[in-house]
Image (cartoon, rainbow, N blue to C red):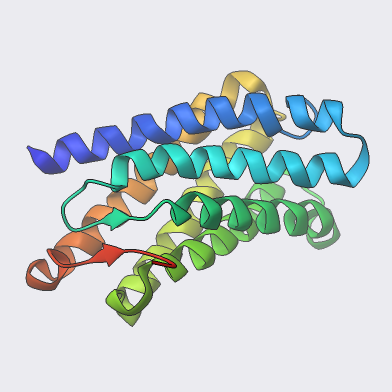
Length: 194
């Protein structure tokens, strides 16, 4: 029962984080990019968007037995989101020309960047296996989410679907990581910069 409860809390936290983060920071429709002109507004919007997602994820993870995190989690998600979004925006259409492939490429940038930055939070308690599972899970989740976003032409109405796709897939990854080695998983702690 705890597993199912955690999984649904994780999806809901991503849903709230994405909707709130999108309202504040999404390129083209977010408050910050509208108020701050140019690249500074885009970067500020991405940082806020990612950090808001990270904040709501932190609320779910902070007291979860076996996957607790420090408040630095939101910084890691914010930085990963910003790096992935800026490199993705810069390079995606230089790599592919088709929108359906663009979602895959952009998702690889987002998932790779966020997967790498948040894996830093797992530090010494994170084996190479867990790191690999988390990175692959993050990439797959963001490919699914960005494919929805690109297919909807970045409609705000699609944001909840993007969030559920990403939250659902990363939630499964977290559960798999936790159960991969139940004895060690019970002591898995995500604590950065303590």
